[in-house]
Image 1 (cartoon, rainbow, N blue to C red):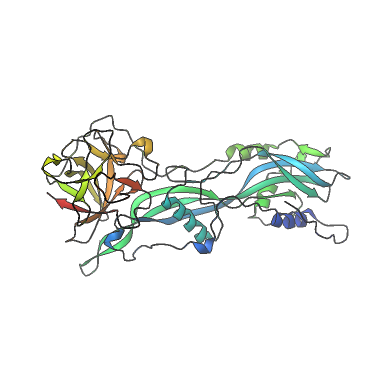
Image 2: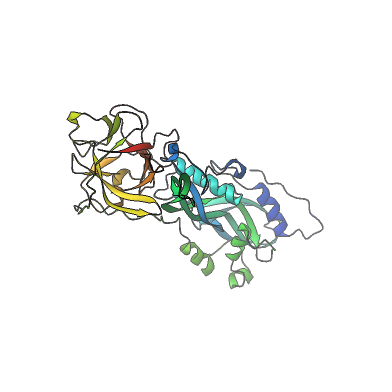
Length: 418
């Protein structure tokens, strides 16, 4: 990257002018940022939705925090006669990794849409794929104009916050009628991302914006300390207590808001409804069929005399909150419960399986319903937040989870009493 030397005005060209001008041309873009104007909300609370939306979801941003963060830093002393281009090896101060909810692997549509919405909301270019700032020492080439005690840095704006899930569900209106609307569903979590990296150098006496990355670097100089005021030979300065403290205090990411999965070793005492249901593709003969073996997945199957109740499901331990049902899906034929396996819980398109019934959020599902009189539903796993659906309509096709649901409407099912 070529740095452009601004013209001097008299003998006092301050370092802040140099740093500001150089930082403007030294911003290094990382992979896959999103232009804020390009991301528009796909849904909003209270907007109308249709039965085809029952198996979909969209993110809603609940809180955000933007914090200038120094990723690499080195105290550097420039003496009279040593100014000019120098290559400074900086030490890692903190590492920021992009993450959404359960996993840092940003492969699902929901995570990409969420981070795009964050960028649009804040007016920032943020990372929307899985990436992280460097955890290794890196060098900064800088043209030092004046002697002094400098903080040489790389930094970015760390963006964290929490999100919710917008789901389509029936809502009773003031006149007693029902309508389908986007509501804030039970699923929630936290996210971390960051903006483009910049690098630069700053001195204690420079005047900088208090909310800037440069100001954060300046604070690490511990300008009132002996290290800032003493005479030094040219070159690196040992880290101050402030720099070491800030380095050790910086977290690398955020924790998720997800409920904890408890495993499936203990048999749960289920309280199940007397009614059994088929979970079918609307207007078509195929429905959810449990496997004969636990290491197989739930598939679309025709209902016949030979189905042996493997196509019949009961709702167990049912709860309702704000019109959204929560239940365990117990299969009549096998005696097992529908579950997303823990080893694939964070995977887009993970296959829906069955397991011994247990008190486990991987076996709990939210059910979103159409207006009364319709049997159409959408099904969401409580732990992963993903919606259930399938890639194509075919006998033997696996049921899978999709972070944003199936946008072609194939995540909408019919709950048919048998």
